[in-house]
Length: 143
Image (cartoon, rainbow, N blue to C red; front, side, top):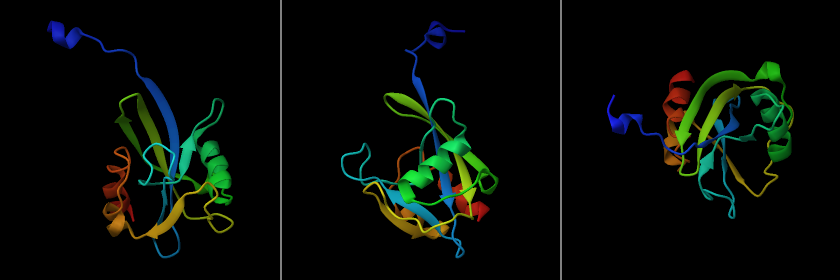
């Protein structure tokens, strides 16, 4: 192994974020636009959030969906679909993506975000964070 290959970089913090593709009866996926004041403001993403210490990704999603959108779902309704693994400048993001077709309530923006139901074929029309982009073809193929 060369000296260059053996060099190590500074440790990078891994951030675990859980996300969901909420799929309505018409096969559309809910996207949320990050509000002003947040990092990556204006970009569209799948709902979700950070997994807290002691939480599973599923429980984090259930909590985040209640907090962000005012809807309730259950672990049995969250189907693991794929994941994103992406290095940003200051951290590495690991993000499992679940699919969900069943929930109670009507998604409402509770944190200043804009919501939009989007057909899978149109997902590329919405600028997204770099980690989300590789998830688009998987969703298009799966649906």
